Length: 272
Ligand SMILES: [Zn+2]
Image 1 (tube, rainbow, N blue to C red):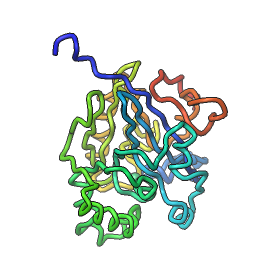
Image 2: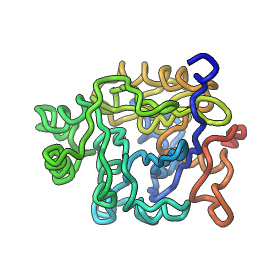
Image 3: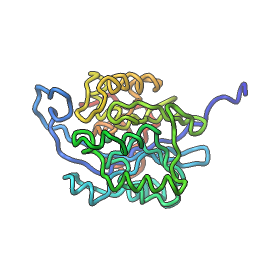
Image 4: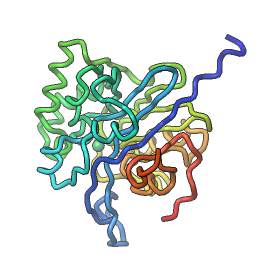
């Protein structure tokens, strides 16, 4: 060990694949006094380095997303191709949770194993799914298909915090769903965190305000602190659905402005 303990530094990407219109009061329990537009972006993420490529979440399927009124700009596989990643050859996908917009594109990754929390698959297949208020973010066929993959040795379970590789770990958050996990990555600037739906927007983190889709409000609010603490700078916790991410980070390459950004960079001040 000794001098050899510095973890590898990864390149980290956010790729936008969808969007929808929404208004600010929809995103906060108790609403918001400012009834103004607050659109939502949909992302997948990629972690590249140390000879491997990890994908975080798989997006919604075009049919499912459009049935729910979301705009599908490109599939996860099409988005990842823009940054040079071939979804067909990706071997490891972290599923932060099993909502339709995070797991729905899993069939675009035929060579992958899927990393999920014990608690998330239990939640998505258990008694809480008899409640419309808790199941609306899940698509039954996708959860069922993932259960089939358990029997094909394509699901890797994690119980709480776990190290996936040097410089890359998952952390159980809960709150939004029972087994929601975030991803911590070591980069050239230090540790950053892909919060996924531990925080939909920067405003949830900064105001410690709960999003409207939730099973445990206390865990959600604790999770805001956790993702900010796991990052070397609180501003390096990257929310899962905030269009500001595309404004704060540099494009991943020429022509990718507004589509794909590099998250292993110091973000600019939030223009919002
Ligand atoms: Zn979600």
